[in-house]
Image (cartoon, rainbow, N blue to C red; front, side, top):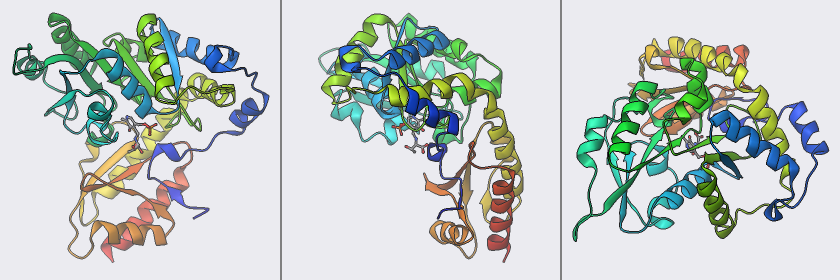
Length: 344
Ligand code: TLP
């Protein structure tokens, strides 16, 4: 639907006119041979923002997470993940398929795992058991409705990891949303990790791409792993160029998305069938439970779509995500449509 108000994800954002111009004018080279200056500029800028030695531009958040897990682990090892995390649930099993490690999912409070629970679940290897080598943390947490993992929790997780010689990787697909919502600089979050990945192609609006940041040795290894997985890209400055704009200019506007999510959440929360505590909406993701006397989730989504509003069924609920390509009018349209359908 051409003029739909699309709340399915912030991945649907289209490149801005400035991004398209940057793509057209990008200076490029063969990045597999190390010749693309635009990619090098993006990687250097990302490493600086994250306070890491080096960074690697990759096609997707899934590949960035997969490379991090592969770089930090070996077979016969275990990785602690949060039970609703994207890396454990929605990345086509690369933990087992690519890295051949055992995931150990832990419960959490809104995505924040209890450091003492982590400590209890760390395993030392013997003839029966794997070695725990990595802890993965996700912030903001997608399936916990965009929850920000508090810096204090990350610090405590990091202390447990250091006590046991274990690495920490942050899936920071939306770490800039976490930073804007909490006022904590992204670098302070990144400081609590050995590696962090973030997505340029979600709320930041670039058409493609994520960046993995870590120490130089690990990024060198990740570069080889990226090639092995077929992710070595050639004149890729054409997509790094909009990534530079995404990184430099787009975090500043994420607060607008958060304000719109709060407005939408407050209105949805009062409607029949909607299970939502609007106070739980911290960033740009609204995750609602749905139990309507007359409508199923697919029926509600179809009725919304008929009124030009798109949302997504996820994890037994429904997700609305705000982003730069939905404005106040789209939010009002969604509120009006949901009200008419659910009250009618
Ligand atoms: N999430 C997508 C879908 O996969 C659900 C979305 O629409 O939200 N980490 C987190 C926390 C993510 O939310 C996602 C994408 C990824 C990693 C993977 O990024 P991509 O899609 O670039 O592989």
